[in-house]
Image 1 (tube, rainbow, N blue to C red):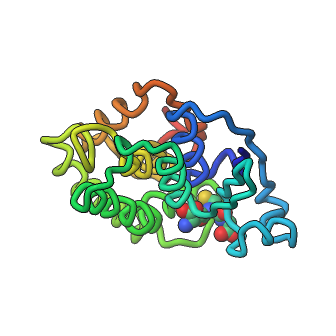
Image 2: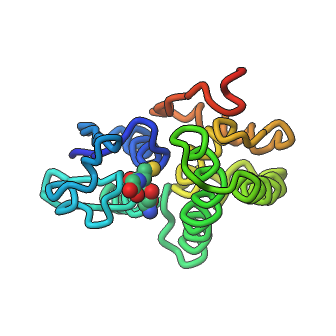
Length: 206
Ligand SMILES: N[C@@H](CCC(=O)N[C@@H](CS)C(=O)NCC(=O)O)C(=O)O
């Protein structure tokens, strides 16, 4: 299968990370976001939203959206350990996928877009949102190792990339020891693949 991605995209890393954790062989196709390749007709034919990541399976199935890719891969491989089938377990995972598409996207991911690409988000607003999210995560992770179950699920994969790189967007993780321990647990999983670190924001001095 192919994953269309960009190396600096946390949404893309989310998809690549899960494929790698599952040991799925995949070809990475880099989409040149800087030159606008994602808004050209051939890419829009794959994803009319003009966004990475996109997964194209060997059987021709096209899956757009990072969280949808996580669901597709878990279900395709029958990995109910990563995506439970029972109503309560599935809902617990979905709850965090929504956080990944909401609070994470409009908080730490947006803050990082400012320092990496000069995006015009209001830093105070998006960094503030990131800390509101981190406080909730810290509370949740204080007495549970994983977000949605007693083992890693796609909920954890969905939150990893942008939380791990939050310092690049000037979001300081030092007040959140449980969150940092959670990131280290994900990084210790067999098959983990790293997300490139950029020397911007708080990571510039690191
Ligand atoms: N909901 C989408 C969001 C993907 C997204 O925002 N991708 C960014 C890169 S991180 C992108 O392609 N941006 C280009 C654009 O929106 O024009 C997902 O989860 O995959």
